[in-house]
Length: 254
Image (cartoon, rainbow, N blue to C red):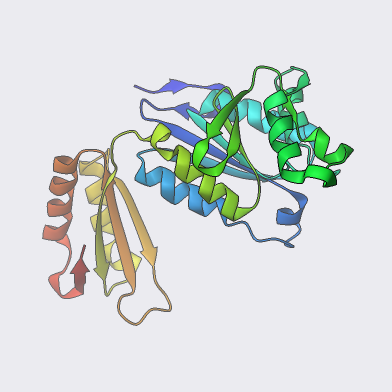
């Protein structure tokens, strides 16, 4: 069953996610985003469907509006960036503004930060102890760190290594079944098999079917991916398609 949500998003019976990449440095091309692709791969493996990714500047209102919209539309929301001590680190303030709450100093966060910076700690570092009122700090024992969660929003730093380390500790929290995958590698172009793809999706409406040309590869020219949460359903769809694909075009199946 699907229900209409604010912002014309659809909230599925299966867990969904939105990813918000925050930072002027991403939009200006100074830094390349690798966090969204990592989170997409990991969440897919856990059975969570990423429905939207947005990259936004370091602006309070823009960030707050996106977070409010994403939080209502999706099961989980992940942000990266904007949680450091400098002038452009505004994610925490944006969360508070977007949900109309105040920020407050967390003794736990302050203790962690002061323990890390020691004598080097200054007023900018001190501001990093502010969190939105109502937020939860999740202990990450293996990292001697804390993860900030506000409702269904997980707020990550922008550094890819930190995102990966934190998500690895938390990932079982998001697991929801499995999305099964089959792949077909072809020596063909999309136009030659378009009618077969149409016929397959018409017959198997719940199938997640992808078609990806590989223009610069020597071993195949097209990869098809078939995905489903039901393995038997996927096998039926796979058999249906294999019966219709020209045998001479098939290179391998995985």
